[in-house]
Amino acid sequence: MIKEQFFPTTIYGKDVKLDNQLFANEIVEWSKRDPGVQKTNRNGWHSTTEMHTMPVFEPLVKELFIMMQDIWKEEWIDREPILGNMWANINPPGGFNAPHIHPNSLFSGVYYIKAPQNSGALVCNEPRPGAQLNMPIRKKGRPPKHLWREVHLEPKEGRIIIFPYYLWHCVEPNKSKDIRISVSFNFIQKGFEMPFNKYQVIKGAVSYELANFVFNYFLLKRDAVKFMYDNNIIADTGMFGTWTDEQIPNTYSHYADPVMETLLVKMLPVMAKETGLQLVPTYSYSRIYKKGDELKRHKDRPSCEISTTLNLGGDPWPIFIDGTGADSVIDERKNIHKPDAPKGTKVLLEVGDMLVYSGCELEHWREPFDGNICGQVFLHYNHVNGPFADKNKFDGRPMLGLPSFAK
Image (cartoon, rainbow, N blue to C red; front, side, top):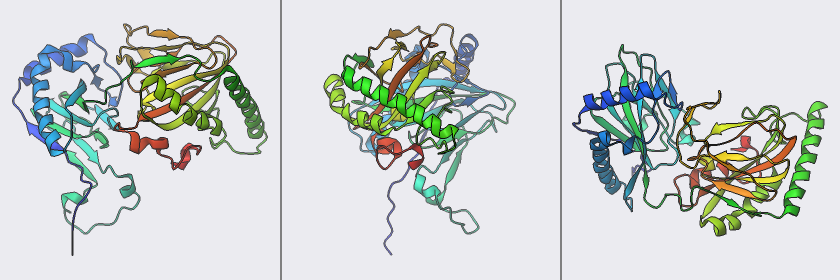
């Protein structure tokens, strides 16, 4: 029979000789003076992501670029690789990293500085979602690697491992009696840098009349949905909006309201003209905020690569955005961030104005609302030629207008 293999997932590795003791000392001292950030790390320390700019780690950066040039040739990738960010990890005994991928990158990887025995393997999982729907029973024995659904890569000091950004992975708990030190990083392709200045305001993105119409429509819908929920006419499936959004509890929120999804498409030519970006729509998310609401400092998920917030009406409520791209959030849920976190830029939108920003790169937030009511809609997009466009088109739904459970 004819047998060919397509769509492989390649994991690259290389052993290099660097001064790991120097790196370890620098990272441990760094962790003593900086609380780090909370990402996928559990019971461990995760540094901020500007490590590649620190002179002491320049030898490692050079080795990463040498390896990436070889991978670029293997993968037939045009243009040059760019090291987007790099950070250190310390996992003490019991520390681990939860499953995740690396958005806003093309290739991601890890370099092991200190890896005692049993300090936690890198676990990579089958990346094709369709392959998880039916798990056949295999014959006894060890199947060939192309049939594996999970691979455990033991850490080795001085080893670099690089893999595609979309590969789901985690780090097992450190079962040794010593700390495990590693460096993680993301590479992008030249040309995927943001062509606009990270954020900008589009004045009068929609007319006052249109914004006011949508605002009043949404108020009526909120009241009608509340009546139907309270009187058990329909159940809260999220299809008509909800008051159970954990980010802003007890506030009416709606994923993919059809009117807002129409705005999502309507704004595409405006976005192209004002920002020079070619975009694909992912989803809309709208809220009617109430007094006392607070949007905690955070960054967004990959479907929000290019985000916008459009003021529909109500009382004024500024949004703050940190244009530096710093990782200042320590724990988003508890609203804990570094004491020296940038104060950000205060942006006050009039009705019909829209703030466009790089949602995955820039932290943004709103301080407690002292008004009574405010209607906003978030319109989210991805770059047409970016790493997320195909996967995140319509946020994984067959078409716009569908609820989240239609993915």
